Length: 88
Image (cartoon, rainbow, N blue to C red; front, side):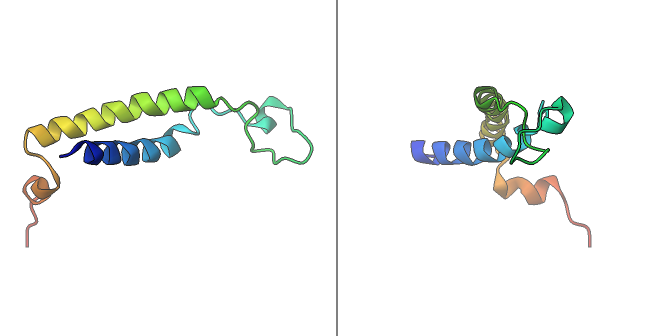
């Protein structure tokens, strides 16, 4: 693969991982008993963007590393029929 292809796949993995990491460690305003007027109770009490970005980057790097390792051993998209045989 070319550099741009590697970057594009990593960006997709990172973006999907972001939505999985966002609720981790979230404390809502209702849980903190600090509801700001004009906001919903389920809004974060304190949004920690740096922590979310760091966790997303670390988790997505592990996932992407596993993907690259699998590709090196020949387990790509083309290998799915071999991994999951269909019995008719």
